[in-house]
Image (cartoon, rainbow over all chains, first blue to last red; front, side, top):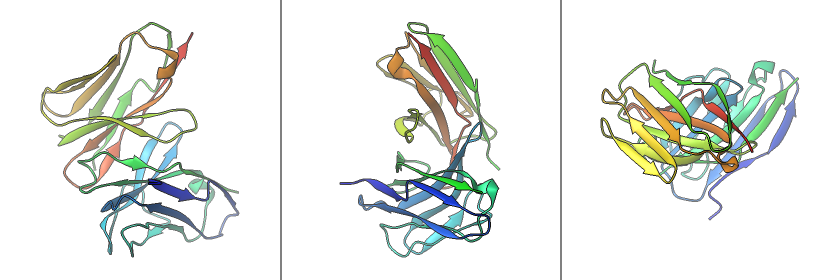
Length: 114
Length: 110
């Protein structure tokens, strides 16, 4: 099993550009989530999904869109990148009920917006 | 909304000294989880506490969950250089949202 995979590992965008961060898991986990990590801020929840076709907002959802068409994939879309979105992005998954089970994290995507 | 704070933000110790990080939630939690993130890596699950007043040990690491289920602590006895990293607590409120604390960065000097 590959676990949770994320692509790309690094990305540089110009302000206003759009892009999609990819996340996939091969553990048949129902729950998936996206976090961003900034110095001194810890990990902040952006969006999460409790199953295919179901998504919901986390703590900091503005500027990001998600969809969950399959159990395996949970892409994060930046519609119009801003410098404030410079961060490290982590995708995570768990078998079910996201706040009651161990989260498995991907390796992260380091995004810089200039 | 639910907020989870951790103190200290940074701790520097000599190898062999003890280390403690504290976690406080603004709301009562259904469970608390602890994660470790090595420099340049991703968070890795350490443990989950569910019961009020629960204490769990993993070798040199001791985890406690407060009686009111609003605070928790992680204590490392006799730190080693392999303990270097950022330790996060994460609170579950039975809302499907796992809210992470701000983290404590531990530096260990040999």
